[in-house]
Amino acid sequence: MIFLVPLAGESRLLTWVRCRERQLRGGRRRCGNRAGGNSTLDIQRVMNLTRRNSARALSRIEVLIVVAVAACLACLAVLGIQVAKGRARSMCCNCNLKQIGLAFRVWEGDHFNEYPMLVSTTNGGAKELIATGQVFSSFQVASNELSTPRVLVCPEDRARLPAQSWTSNFDDQTVSYFLSLDASETNAQMFLSGDRNLMTNGTAFVHGVHQLTTNQAIGWTKGFHKNRGNIALADGSVEFLSSLGLKLGMQNSGIATNRIAIP
Image 1 (cartoon, helix red, strand yellow):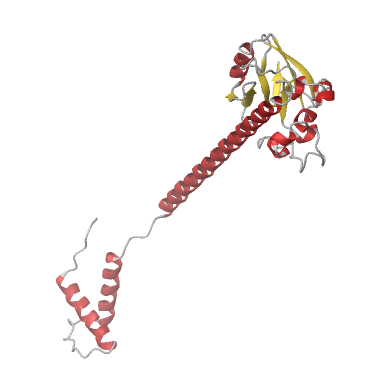
Image 2 (cartoon, rainbow, N blue to C red):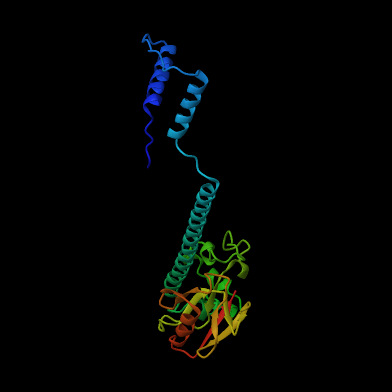
């Protein structure tokens, strides 16, 4: 920082000007005679001196730089918020599937130690219904354990809205998660449920029953979780997998073919 020191004449002139200002505000102090000279020139000298001592204004380029930096910071803040929201939605999906796994484990304790997909409708299950591709009925028979149908919709699934109750407009269009027709607690690594945005050989799965094999080119579409997805295993645990992780999970499931129903 550069400090400008006024000349002797300028210093006396400034002292006289300040004194006159105090005198005009009501002070009684007398001001000595100012240095002789033209009053107009003296005033101009005061203005020039004041300008030199005042802070320098920002140039146009500096203003543009400040605006650009502020815009970049704002973009980074918005991006951070969006990333945080995406992580929160993924965590909610994970929690939904954990609740499904826990509810099915509680349900099987009263139904021959089998999940609803393996228990006949005559015994309170949904085996015959899910064989036709109907997914929601397997969740409906476990409604007491699930508590609310809202847990059946992934927050990343923008095409599905949760049903208000288990009887009002509850169908496959209010469900985001597939179900395995063959899942059993005795085989902990089998797929139980998961995000419905599956594909094979670049083609997305549609509503209905599909067979997944260990040598199949299976993966996730871009619909949910940015080419990733959540899988609930038969033991109630949930894993967040990439397409490669999904294929490895299939190979470690313990069976050559997994039958799943897509809602």
